[in-house]
Length: 158
Image (cartoon, rainbow, N blue to C red; front, top):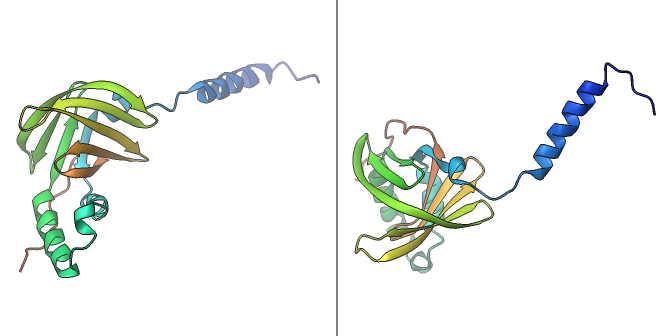
């Protein structure tokens, strides 16, 4: 097969791009998750409903917990750095937690950090499309979307 000389550079560039994409590792890196993430309260609530303690809970109790959780989540954000994450709510810093990346599992980074009692905890920072799921703490799974939080749009509990 003979290709015109004008097509050879284009073919070479396309081949290089395809090889680069094909060689990309699917493992997440810290660079993939660094930045500002805002809480996705509905996705977080969906995760919480999978917890064993919700299995036999009455629907009215689940709804009360949901309403309270939505208010508490409000405009929560997390700033992920290479060695820590900082939680904020409505622009006010709640706390910073240093962590160490100890490994990967597909699109998840395995991290170690000190829990509120000082004991070592193992957690996960997992990319799920355009979402970041943080797990391993007392709160179960928290799901975030990239970007700053919008103004809280919760309804008061009556």
